[in-house]
Length: 159
Image (tube, rainbow, N blue to C red; front, side):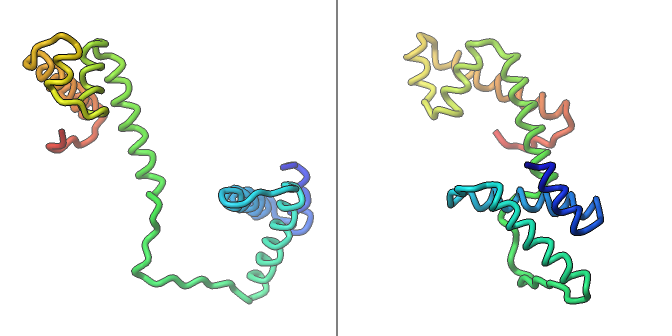
């Protein structure tokens, strides 16, 4: 369908770059629409959206600009692309570091920091001393901080 949609748009615009942008916008609108509603005929929906986008494009080109003014105090609730990429890189670094940990240390860390178990609960469940559990958690945190530091991320004083 992408190829036929692209030909449809490009045949009306005669601009390959703008045509590709409108095709991408069509798919984006389909994705957003399908979050809350179902689409019985995806192809018809996409061609109708593309038709509307072409109309808007031509209107803007004819000197009738579509201007959307937002109040300055309205912030986008979504993170910026660079923030998403940085977060993904941090997570990937931490996952790699956790994979390098011994299975015992990783299990203790996950039970305490992710599952919320107390040091005492973990010690009793795993047949270890409290000091041993605390040592594994401390070393796991140090390993994660070191992994982030090696990748150039600021770890601050977070624990």
